[in-house]
Image 1 (tube, rainbow over the protein chains, first blue to last red):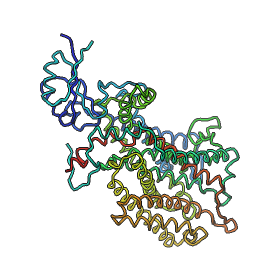
Image 2: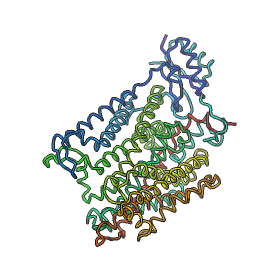
Image 3: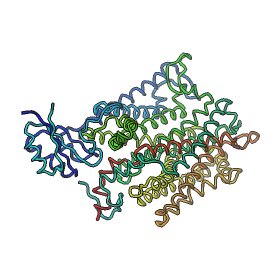
Image 4: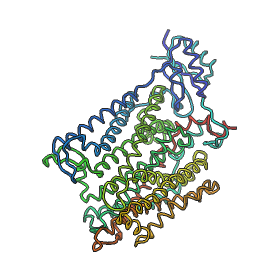
Length: 173
Length: 457
């Protein structure tokens, strides 16, 4: 029997969520769900793990902060200490208050940009990438559940029973 | 599902389905521009050309073509810089601070407010750049290893903090904006008919980075938006604080004040919201978004204008009190000179526009009136420009030595660069309103079931 991919299309996010739970309780694995907007609770319903992007942002911020501290120390104290406006650059801790704005800005700069780059990289978003959505209506008002299975009859019935308004079945070549 | 109290007024009017929102947001992008758009665009373009000529003349001849003199070394250029940066603040406030406070009314206006931020910061950044005289040496402000005997930048200087603050602010705002735009560009990509507009399809495909709306992508999207909001919130407060340090860390009477950072931030939000009102009141009409940018949104923004206007008013009074209470005669003279000296008209324009006129917002009838709001927003914009002019020019035009007292009068180049920057700003904003999804439609769809009129019945 050939493997098939079944697309269940829904009109409402609440119906989709219920259907997700139903399908998963039948031990059928959902390949992907495409939605036009972030649906709250969908990651739970699909059993997705929490994203660690916030942790990554914290680490990037810490790197930016450390780099800024090193940069201000190296430039102002180590490489070429100068007495500017009666404020000599003898020791870092004496001049540090004047560097707080720079350290803060560098922290934000690193955290924000590197986090976004990580996000684009992990989600494979870049110019020239093609959309992987099987139906263009998923950016408008349709919610699509993608399931791969041998038994397309059983899946189709289940999806229909749980509220799908449209079922499309395709053979996987 | 989120539910909302029925007492709260709806944020989306009419029976809008998800599909209706898609159509309404895609319409201005896919349809042809109307006559009004071309007229405004034409005027803006003429002003932009004036800007190019004035800037070209300044760079070719030197900043001696401005009205500056030995006493007044900073005038319109820095006034315009601070004015534009301040205007930018409302965008970040709406998208970041209101996101952290879970304010749903931000969703209809955040995209355009952020666009305004980015275009305003572009205008702002031009002024220090052309003030350098030789803008091709602008890289001197960055701490890059060089061949001039390790000639480093001075990290003690607030002007250098500004470089870091403005460049971080601009780039982070841009990224924040773009992250939100990706799903909406994808919506437009899928709406464009490839048969008729192959080029348009291609452009929006590239812009949307191949977004397909997978569950994991949305989870990451929300996390990234939240963290960016958390980062942008202290960032936006830091930026105008640092701009105010340009003045506050000097020893010039009238500038040397510890209340400058909060005072400038409040003023920035005040002027920024006024600019958002100016733009959105016109835009909602021209592109037919009255169902999304409702009177309620206008009222909320007017309340912010009233609040920040009063904060600014308190700051003005505090300044006067501190000048008197400090007992420093130079400080006292600086403020006496502001209110009664040769620039009294600038001071009292500022007071009228910024402190007295927002008091009218206490009346619900007025703050829910579109025409009144538009006029008041213009007043606030003018008043906030005068505030910066008053702070900068009146503080330095009469210094410690009466023999060097002087006045400032702008040349046509000063005027050209300022008015031209408004033209430049509108050119960018008008192009944006025809090619970008002007409402964050993907996120707006999340509140249809909690805050739209049809579900509240």
